[in-house]
Image (tube, rainbow, N blue to C red; front, side, top):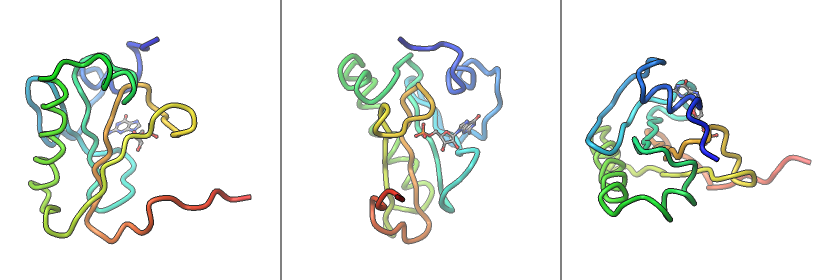
Amino acid sequence: MYDPNNVFARILRGEIPCKKVAEDEHTLAFHDINPQAPVHVLVIPKGAYLSWDDFSARATDAEQAALTRMVGRVAREAGLAETGYRVLANTGRDGHQDVPHLHLHVLGGRPLGPMLQRPRD
Ligand code: 5GP
């Protein structure tokens, strides 16, 4: 069940501030509050989608295209197209998703290392 009081829903309603990077009809991009790289932008759909699983199943083609294009735009405008970057969507329990509104992390600005670290014992 989608929780309309999650922090990103509150950002979308303007109840919590964010440092906006870009916006269009279907998406909002803003800086992560706790950046893990020199560039760390979150791209979210404006619709009430819990996760990648939910979004990929239910979102309209226009919403899905807008999200994809916004990720590319954000990365290009941040100067990452040449040096490279990482896009990731933590999904559900095993994916360690903390905020229950779909968000794509766009990370770059330094070498990011291997994709996954071994879990600590
Ligand atoms: P997750 O672990 O769900 O993939 O990532 C959630 C992300 O949201 C984290 O990187 C965290 O720093 C970011 N975050 C959590 N609360 C806020 C907030 O209020 N504002 C912004 N800009 N980012 C947030």
